[in-house]
Image 1 (spheres, rainbow, N blue to C red):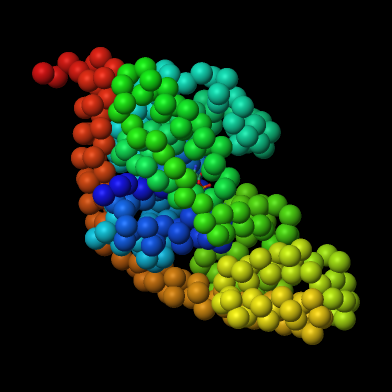
Image 2 (image 1 turned 90 degrees about the horizontal axis):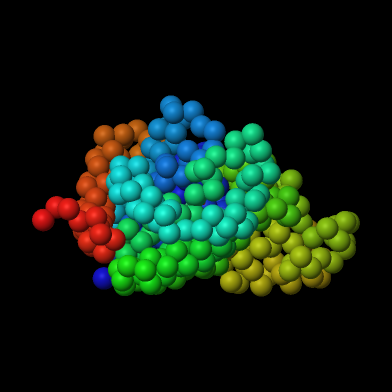
Length: 327
Ligand code: TYM
């Protein structure tokens, strides 16, 4: 069975971008592939963090993974730091990766501006660790949102360099990008992101969802209720495309163009459809939060399985790079 790898940083609550761009797409892949879904706590350390919060966030993300339908009988759910080979392979890859490749990564440039007082080596090395995450398991498919594509491009270059220098150990990797791979925030301009105040979070109640949606930006040209709108320019409509069935999407688009439906009614329908999809996740999430023993057992089991696969890959890596002193 071919392998899939993906992960989420435990830096705060998950929002609709994480859900639509990543988690939701991970679920069906469990039927076709051997999937490894990680909580990438080493990546979270590239930013300022509180140790207690990091631990809590890891647990919360694990609860979200389970609540969204990741099945520990089918997939491996693991914590990145609990398989130390991620860090070990990163070092080996570091010694193959030119600094200039990392300096030109768009997220490194952005983050360096955002956190000018904390441009640490980990921040720069972020994509190398990400490469190690994936190739350690010889994963061939990586389901992510669009913002991760430059990282995956670099990962391909690094693994090709390894293979060219030390022999074909790692298979090529392909991204899996689906509908919802670039979810905009409620302001309709920037990408939905934890650092911006433009998110709907996965755990929000129907009332909280409505409160946020009611203020969401729509087609800016539609000022009066009687103005016809353009659904293709409306961010709320783009959420309908992700949460409403096709029939509703057609009705909303027609109603918007002919001004037979106003923005408030359009948002009310969306709020209901969104809450219908998210409510069962929220309920299950609240159940898992009450069962830390179960959740940690799942993670311990996942960590064990991940370590076995990782050790096998690393035996091959040691052999090829000339540090196999064990036999
Ligand atoms: P992170 O934690 O920033 O985001 C987790 C996933 O959510 C997706 N995402 C979005 N998708 C659509 N629209 C948005 N507005 C949006 N915001 C976030 C991200 O694309 C991502 O898929 N570097 C990764 C974690 C990582 C990883 C890996 C991923 C570490 N190692 C190996 C894949 C393979 C990250 O920071 O994700």
